[in-house]
Structures are given as C-alpha cells and as structure tokens.
Length: 366
Image 1 (cartoon, helix red, strand yellow):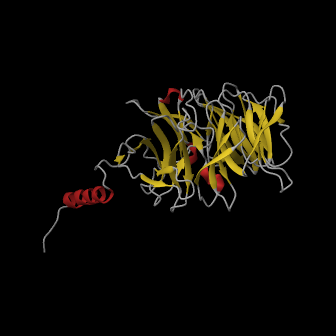
Image 2 (image 1 turned 90 degrees about the vertical axis):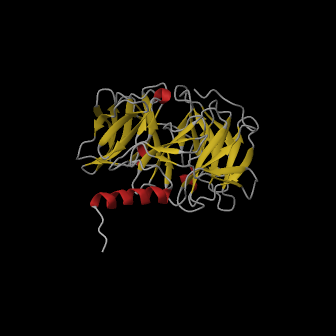
Image 3 (image 1 turned 30 degrees about the vertical axis):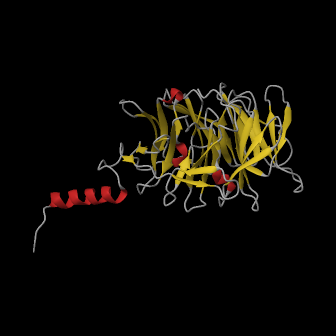
C-alpha cells in the first residue's frame, strides 16, 4: 500500500478546494473570487438585469442608511465560504475580494467609512474598523456581555458614531457608541421594542421605531419625541442625502387607498405627499431625490419600479419576484446611474444590478 505524508495530504486538500471553486489558493481574508455574474433580459420588461452573486449562497447588501455602494464597487456580506464574511466586488470585473475572516460576523453591520477609506463591521462583540489600505484593523468598541443586541448596526455619515438596538434585563434600549472614544451611552429605554435606528445626515440626532411609531432623539439624549407623521402604518423611513427631510412610506388604514410616499421636515413640521405608489414596501431616492426606486409588495405585479417626483409616474424596470418585498432593499448608486437590489427568485437571496443611465440624470456621487 502506498503511503502519503501528512504534508502532501493537507496540500492536496487545499489544491482540490481551490480547483473546485476556481479560486486562487489563498485561504480566508484576501482571497479573490472569480466573477459569477449572469445577464438576462427581464421576461416582463426586457430590461437587461445582471445577477452579481451566486444564488447557491445568501448575499446581503448593507442596511438601508448604511453606505455600501460606490460607482465602482460594492460592499456586501455572503456565506459563500461556509460562514458570514464581508466582501468587496469590483463592479467592472465582477470579481470579489474577501475582506474579513470573522468568527461571528453580523451581516447587517457593514458600512463604508467616509471617503471610502475602509469599512466597519461587527464580529461577535467587537465593532471593528478595517482600512482598505495596508493599515491594521482596529477594535472601536466591545459590546457588554449582558446586552442582547438586535441584528444590525447603523452609523452616522461622518463615521463618528454607531447606534444599535438591544435588550437588557427584559427592557429594550438604544445605545449610541462614540467610535473615536470607544465609549457608549444608552439613549433611550422602553418596554416597547425599539428598532431600526437611522442617524440623520449632517446632524447629531436620529430617528427610530418604538413599536410601530417613529420617534426622534438627539445624540445627547435630549428632545426625545414621537414624530407627527401621517396617520396609518409607516413601513419605512429614510433621510434625504442632505438630512433636511425625512421621506417615508405611508400605508393608510383604508385598504382601498394606495401606499403613498411622503416627506416630513422636522424643523417646521411640514408634511407633504410626494406621490402615490404601486404598494411600495421598500424604496430609495437618488442623490437629489428627483427619482425613487421602489419594490412593490403586490403579489400580482412584484415589480421593481422607478418613480419620478415631477411626473408622479412609475416605470417598471423588472420583476423582483422575491418571496418578500422587504428583502429587495433597492438602492441607487451614488451617481444615480445604476440600481442594486436583492431577490431570492433564483434560489437563495442574491444581489442584482440594472443600469438606468438612459432613464435617470447623473448626480454628484461624492
């Protein structure tokens, strides 16, 4: 019987693994994955759609409000290595580079730093900053062991603060982290569930959900109040790029009425309708809020739609065909020239891309 050395055996395993996946033999952080993009014409609209990631695995975009897309690259989370890790995709070559070798990555904790110099993520109890240059990773904060954090972390646009919802001793709370000082404070505590915190750009405040109501609070814990939004359900809120207005979906109690897109100005209390929608569940505005991309929750017409602010009309881009419209998370590129979204229509949740440069005027993507 032929005998093999332990070194040969381990080397052959690595070679077989690399050959199976068509990857370089670099293991873990720094590994490059070849493009797996697949183009197809949408059956309903004939717009060209590109599936960027493999639907054999689950891939996630950054949370709404957290930056993960530039004109040239995409920051995302995937379990394609057998565990959740962060990846950066070159949108020209469609190749992906593994950025982390985390033991317990929270896939909903990714966000680019200002000037795209690196990114933030949560690994277990460690909130970590990783530069894209040759610099070392740095732990910015460690969560207390007695706090049960809800999935996801949101960040201020200047990269100075992080906020997350948690539970301690049976009560819900919202904690704000100073990323430069490594300290945290509890902003608010409640018996009702607190969730979906969203820092306001260019301001030291945020909005959050308490149950089904939307509240606002300053970073110093002052001016905690419920916002007088339009009557009905509020499936989603988002700030305009300059932080001036809070745009939100309003689902009236009357089921015969359509879901509307509205805008609230905190300083004046002004609240006005932007347009009615085809039952949007999730939406995102481009850089100047002149055009919106929305995911319809209609079972008969599960479309991804462009909505123009001036004409108040919708254009169907493609069928998202996701099992849940809330999963779709449609997002404009910073320059408004393409749209990224998620769907599980071909298997597990994958990331998709559609060019809209012929439909939407380019905006400043800085």
